[in-house]
Amino acid sequence: MVEVVDETDDAVSIALAVPDHLVSRFRYHPGQFLTIKIPTDRPGGAARCYSLSSSPHFENDLIVTVKRTPGGYASNWLCDNARPGLSLTVMTPSGNFTPKSLDGDLLLVGAGSGITPLISIAKSALVGGTATVYLLYANRDRRSTIFGTELHDMVTEFPTRFTVEHWFESDQGLPTAEGLMRSLELFSAYDAYLCGPAPFMEAARSALHGIGLPDAHVHVERYRSLSGDPFADVIIPSDTSAETVSATVELAGRRIELDWPRDTKLLDVLLSKGYDAPFSCREGECSACACTVRSGEVSMLKNDTLVDADLSLGLTLACQSVPVSESVEIAFDQ
Image 1 (cartoon, rainbow, N blue to C red):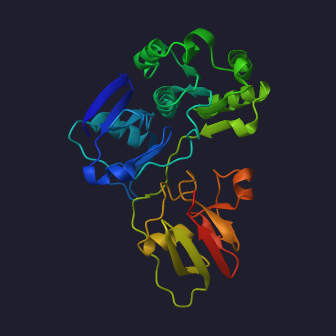
Image 2 (cartoon, rainbow, N blue to C red; image 1 turned 135 degrees about the vertical axis):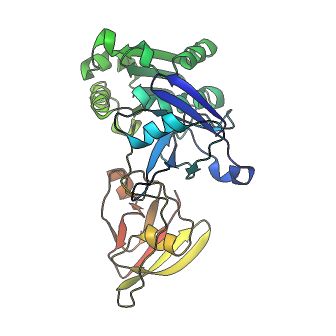
Image 3 (tube, rainbow, N blue to C red; image 1 turned 180 degrees about the vertical axis):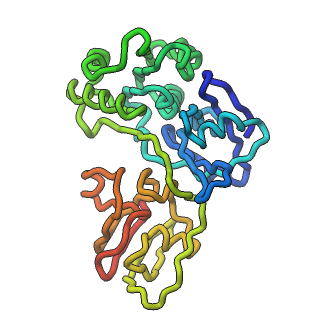
């Protein structure tokens, strides 16, 4: 940790320096997040996902911005203890809340700390692309606005490409679908990225539907609160009587043949055998472990991230998938 910046009374930005030998593994796309291990004596550990507010196009450090959550152990620990010189254990960047192109026009809609991945996308598009970017940002009041000065400076630097509309609850009341529609009606041809508290997201999605923005052009990032410890070692008890199926897994250019127990999730099998499969939460919340079923059939125990379009392409979550057919072929090709 190289720097800690107070953004507001209850939010800090934490800049993390990556060791030279790990730089290639920590390259990221704008809008992605880090899973951070929080020091604790609690059983099961503590880990939280925080979006990167930095841009990979011109900032060398990884920067996450953390807002205190009332009663939240992780956010309060970071806000109280983050200081230069502190080391944190983190997973490599992950997440699919990232534009495929920085040249297409972008509509960013956020509230509170939901600005974190959005400012990463905005900075990246302005510096690394040609997109016109419109940001609608809702907060309680001016004092609670994270990145207020930075956003003003960005508008000054890119006056023809970047526009920010602030919505202050103290002046305008809580955002409503009808009110948001009036602000967003000119942007029905843009790709939209939404992040914020659930009630705000519901109103924003209704507004975008109301102005005719197709669902395929609406991308949503949700807050993640992990119940388990994704950093814990995976150990599968040896059971010679367990029924297995034959699995072929393509991973990082390798073709792996293995026996897959019917009652064990694919990610657990791979991690227990020492394979470096991608993941961030191990709880079906982030889609970092998404992979494609090339042949055979699997069943997902939980799915809160893949939509029908993903499923139609054969995507599944390795951390939630158990085998159904006698043989399965899977590829980590996303």
